[in-house]
Image (cartoon, rainbow, N blue to C red; front, side, top):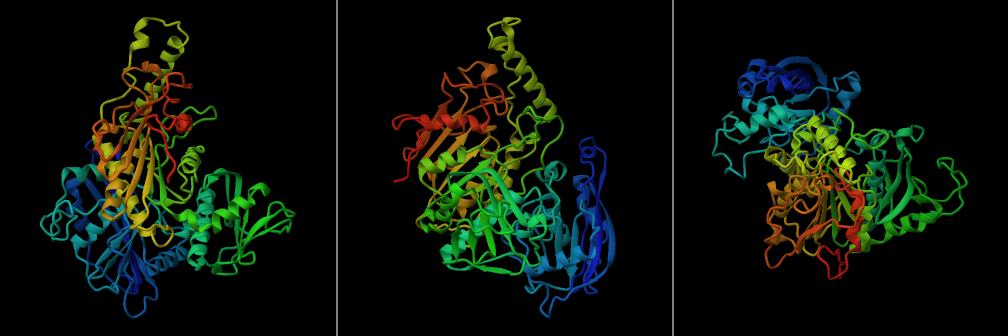
Length: 610
């Protein structure tokens, strides 16, 4: 792996590191690759770190850096140094870090979008802090007096997403790069992460409202701002949003289509924000305006919800205005919480078949406030309506197919083809030969332990974001509220990681509903922490192979058949008479509505909260 590093010098900041990620396959073939990185110094700060210093540390993972130094960059950091971020989270920049990042981005509009950048500053306002880089993000910050260990440690966080070795290993007791001692050793598991993980290179952290302004983020932006309004209404506070946003720009007209919110279906939800203000007063200033058209609305004679005299406008279908108003103003909906964790998000053609060789990038490990990708097809609303909890958050457990039991997209597509052939001949009772109907070689069951571990580890990063959002964008009382979880497919491993981290933060759990989990037998949480744990999916023993879930061939969740006496649960299979079934159909989340046909006495019944 070759990493390109560009160093940019900013006054009051020492350097900025820039890294690009070229072909990683070279590493798997034993060839040395390289990463390009840049340092940028701020306000005349200097760094003595060299390209050779970086390579001496990372050569053990077969990774090389090409380091370049950018011109000085001037930025006013005041007299106390760069504002430090919370070093326990690693998923947030401080406000001053964002300001510096954005100022440089504005100055260098042609910055390399496939590179990592590290700003070197004279010092932080916390003299003990020598560096900070958000895990899996492209921008980092180090102090001028940071040594090689400290710089390479921060790069490991940002470029490769490596975690600290503690608390698994007691802090300051090892020579590992990710401990706080002076050592720079890496172990095999860390090498594999460096060589095999693919991180989306982004300048935004998990709390950047600016990340919602773009054509692919508009639905997420809708849910983000409605949640901001809802929380502010409960707390009697204001909603803040970025300055300089222009309503004449399409990026500020946020829209979600054919979506669900609070258990209610909407054909569309639009949020229009005005740029003239940087805050919006919410309490007692949210109201319906019937037939009072506005030039900002798509239907100028239509009705809408006004927030603070039209500083924010929410447009929904006429028959959903009351639903939206109730959702925003009913503070009782904050009691308890449901977390939905989706799995793999395939790229498909017009007929719905998976495309060959192309995938979405891995999850960015951040919490959202609605189903912005339309993954759940209303199954989330059915859970919310049955349980009675109206406030939900969403985590994206999507990872590459290489983390699954298929190990690669080509192998997955071969299985999909063979299962389709078998179903075509056997389901119509006209088999070419009997072996076709009993063959199950296309059901890839060999467990990918490393892939499961990757998703579990990244789930912990998402849990950090969840914990950070509590008290800000998430209303949750650790003393009285409980968290229910619904996970599908790859989302199971991701949810396991979240559960372990959330438990350490004092979150109490209610029920865990696991739909068609991928590689379910490779890991688990502590089931005694839940009141109920149910696994729904194919019966891999009795069901015909060509009718089974081929995307995530089922095996029992570890411990599901031997739960503690205090935990109710077990396995629940797709009904014999249910259709459709098959390689895709037995996995697709929209086909799991049969769960809500279960009666109160049946296993897997989703019961309302008392």
